[in-house]
Image (cartoon, rainbow, N blue to C red):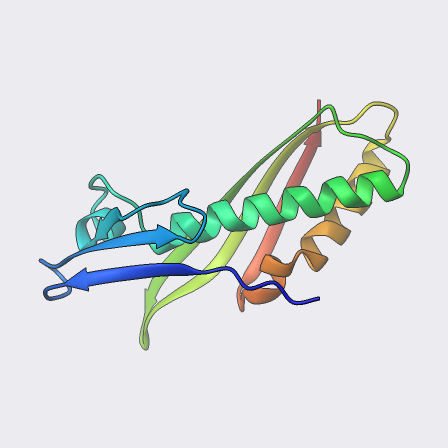
Length: 142
């Protein structure tokens, strides 16, 4: 089975003063603005790193839900935040690390089993496989 999903970007101008928009096939983002200021200076708008973080958090959380289900558990709640680190090195900017912060409520599971299944989900979620960066995980049960 192959599934294709599309995202698109439109840009006008130079890198520092130019402006762009990002859209998704589903319409979840429709010409949402981004630019140098939103990427590097904390100005309003989005940036590729936070979009990757949202995608990674969503993918990982779904993968963990499957791992839990396969092991006979159902989560009351899984909350994941992915922090994507963009760093400037000698060769320019690179995404060097993604840190997943997971808080979960899963009735009847031990912390040991939760950690095991979270690690499997981290290693096997398709977005994790996409990154050529260190991916760390901190998982806690509530």
